[in-house]
Amino acid sequence: MKNVLHLTEIYDTGGAENMLISLVENLDKSRYRSIVCLLRDGWLNTQLQKRGIETMVIPQPHSVDFPWLQRVYRVLRDRCIDVMHAHEFAMNIYGSVLSLVTRIPIITTVHGKNYYGDKWRRRLAYRFAARRSTMVAVSEDLKGFLMQRIGIHPNRIRVVYNGIDLQTYKVNDSNNAIRDELGISPDQPIIGTVGNLFAVKGQSYLLRACKSIANHFPNFVLLVAGAGEELVMLEQQANILGISGNVKFLGFREDVPSLLQAMDVFVLPSLSEGLPLSILEAMAMQKPVVASNVGGIPEVVQDGMTGCLVPPSDPEALADKILQLLHHPQAAVTLGKQGRKRVEVTFGLNQMVYEYQSLYANASS
Image (tube, rainbow, N blue to C red; front, side, top):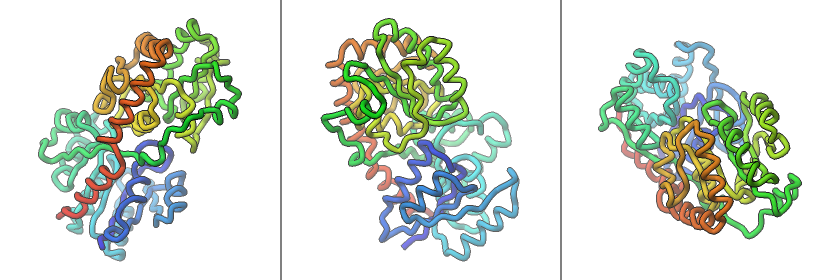
């Protein structure tokens, strides 16, 4: 059995966090024993512990933190770790340094573009990580970014798509539960989005699109599931646009499948993405998707076949595609069914777990 230490700087709710939970929970327990090392306590730590997964919190108060390296070094030694798996920029770099010192092999997963291409020191650091580790990008688009912007050779990067548990996302015949909970009548169209409320997620453009949608469907409802720093600004924007009565900000929700079941159209207006789990979840629930043509999204959403793609930062294009789907519900149903098939073939959890287990099994220092 191999002992795997997962290093992560993420701790709150989000796609990368849910990907890590799914991966660790579904690894073959007869072959891999997982320990997750986090920089701070939070939602992710709670969720892992609920599932019986061993965790440890080792704070890292400084961006250059040698005491942190020493503490993790002792964990690697004392727990007889065979493989490390790091997530996101800081842990990918720190983990690669530890791999150099200990000769323990490491997998480094890159979930998004973030900020690490902005400074030459960060680009150099990621080139070092790519030489020291088996580097994984979650989409072909992200691999291209690492090659072109960071200068990493293509042979140093593997693409492993995020995957979801299709058993969790099963379509049923009724969406009344959420409608009843939120006081939404059967004749009200529901548009929805799921994601942290950050500027990069583009929810402000969706609100502007909804101003136009209200002219055609005055009783529509927009469900916004997620928490984040943009909440107050978005609430104010909805009020200024005169659609505050149509918009329900739900905060963080654990019942995403039920929310998706209630939606007529799912929208992801992001300005940048790696490979968003929320789109996979919506497609698995057979929901027609309207999404920005950015990042890894076009690798999931095939325009006109499994969903609709629009330019980022374009509320008019968003409104146009959403209205097309609301005016043509049968076409929307067809897109939803084709989207489910797409996820089943390419983005299942079993495939993701299989590929990471293969990387662990073949990892070498």
